[in-house]
Image (cartoon, rainbow, N blue to C red):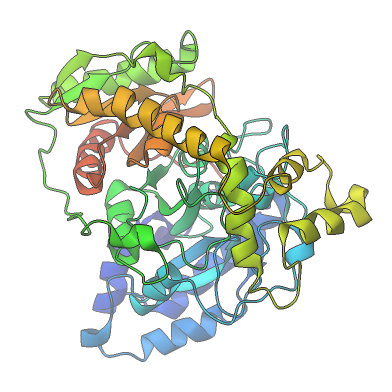
Length: 472
């Protein structure tokens, strides 16, 4: 077991670590070895990682051979990638035992950009199987391929989902940062549950090509990190158009600089009574801490409410059910050794239910029951309703009042932001009852840089990210 005080290298966030490796204060190889040693010591308990990249040290050595002028902004940074994102030479399983022989030959564009910037891919992070769109009632962080992820803050604390392994790995310092994906809460939830930073970008900021999909209307990849500046750093590298992802060509990449004093003079709308019922004590404490910090920073807070007719406090599934079959079949058509369609996934799970579907596959059956061509009137009406309720009658009227961002207690705002496709950042607010708490900041479309700047100052004033102690 590792000592209670980790190696000082593990205390550096991505921005500080990359500065050190670019200067030559540290080599990419020694950083990679430090993280691999820690990962191998702690992962058997945490189950945050499904696959370790056995070529990581060789990749680091190649980076060390580069002259300083060719070292990128992520030089030597050890990252984990959620196991529904293609990394050449490593399995992309989406957490399913049926997919363990699927080894892509090509990186997803976001991974290729990370590598080009100097990142070392340590491996693939565990997730809730099929990104939590397999069934109802599945435990967050469980997959057949990776087992049950554990929260490093303590037994019985939820890991959140579906990017569970990514959140846990960052909190436990098994990597310097990780990449997750979100359809509705799947970056924000695990980041907040592990007490770290999660950015759910505007849909289209980061291309989804090479990512096992749920919904092209809502899916996005995004960083999970130990500081907001790290989230901006990784997002800036991954962002940009890709020819195979139409959404990534819809708007210019926003600036992701983080100016100091960003909160001064801002107008922040506070969702003190969001959909979903009364706040829990943990949510109340998180909101109070965030409000005090925002006021101290010079922000003006205004209580706001959503149109109650929006009814987006929960997760409405119709659009996702319809899009899943269409989008997943398009991805699986390129799989060489594994299921080639959603129907084959269902049939494969049925061959050995005890091994392949501990919690059933209700949502897979529901999606397979659609036509899969998105021609159904019910789908078009559901998508139009989601946009009306989340944008036209939901968030847009609030931003039209001059608000820079909305502040939500806990995770209350994830669903409406996901339906709208707007950016959200989760910011830790400390512990309550021994478990991490946090708030969300949500902004309008393509305001990722602005929201990150606000979150960066808020996070600094709240004391930054805390790390759980290593087990003795």
